[in-house]
Image (cartoon, rainbow, N blue to C red; front, side):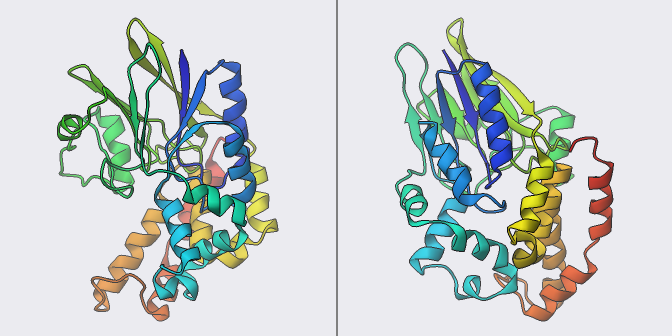
Length: 313
């Protein structure tokens, strides 16, 4: 038996299409989707339509929670007006009722239990939080990407997964959210992040997913990276109005897609430094003057140069 595992699609239709084609060449028997299908990209309805057609085992991620809260009127008031949330508004205003109803029906986690193979628990972030991050023990190359993405400080050791494994009945755990592919095996248990279909943060801007193959009484993982029509995504950011209407975050999203680096996170940290200095240490939304200063002083050109130097796309 072979299963495909994907996560963090983020409205990137060309990337998902390329991965689906790669899956079909590998004769998968089923597909697991671990959350974050919407927000950040220019194809919200089309991406969800393709995902729904796959008949996959699907859960909700944190970005699905964003759009549900927005449409239910439960989001913070600035989400509806502030320039800082313009990219999220663009997505929310381009989703149709059918897509929203489908997203609302999704569970936050689930167990995939098939005859003759070990069961698999699927979450987006951690067991208790779709915004949480699972960070494995790993070699220095893997941990370098977690540190560069800002998920692990330079001096901290990785937390590993011992406590997480102790809370899970199933021998296999799938997660997403960090956009960094990895696998950890310990004491007969395994956890795996397939990487991100869109916006990978390990320096490789290709679409990433994983294949799980049942062999010799256990699941074996193969991470895959698939090239796709990146120019089509760039063009859609412009033509569909996301870049113009979504503001600085849309610009950062596109640069993250192009470079395989956490430009969105870097923009947030830059904003945070300015907000704290101005007396807003616990900000959710900062005054527009601080936001404008953050956008105007962010080193956009350095990331744009990385995008131009990229060998892909």
